Image 1 (tube, rainbow, N blue to C red):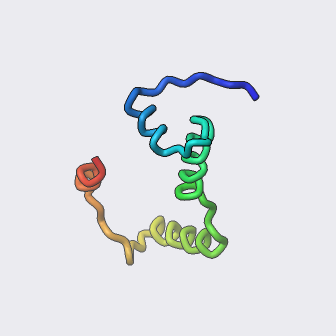
Image 2: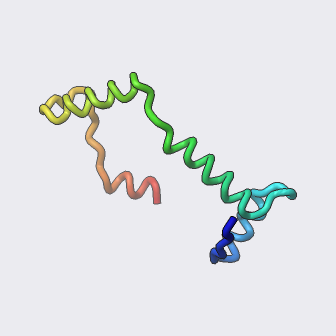
Image 3: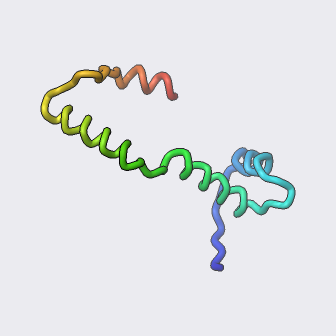
Length: 81
């Protein structure tokens, strides 16, 4: 395996240290965090979910906005800052 060096701040280094088990390397910790992120945010849709969202997109593209809610982007930015 080819190894690479990455630079992290002291703060991130400390946080990684606290997230890891004593037996884990930083590579293990980062790999575990990436896996958790992928499971949470990159899951595939089921066929039923994909069909539902494709239908909603089709309706939206045809001007049917029933069931949609207007969102203020500035409010979202403030909420997640």
